[in-house]
Image (cartoon, rainbow, N blue to C red):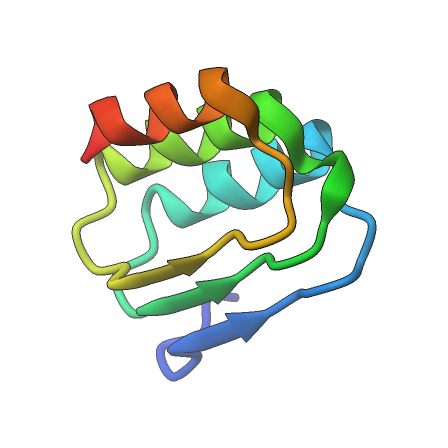
Length: 85
């Protein structure tokens, strides 16, 4: 069942990598209520996670805040995110 009330999801320091973030990003493509996603300090996120998030951002128009400090997305990940925005 989908939540119509969850507007903020905080998952810092969870050790999420690109594959896990890809699953989250895929679910958020059709989410119409989440406005804040905190993935801070998930160092394995890397460029692959950033690419998955960038693809999600191309379709999700509700997310307003995405926190990625300490995720080491690198230049490649930054480019993916910048292109999506």
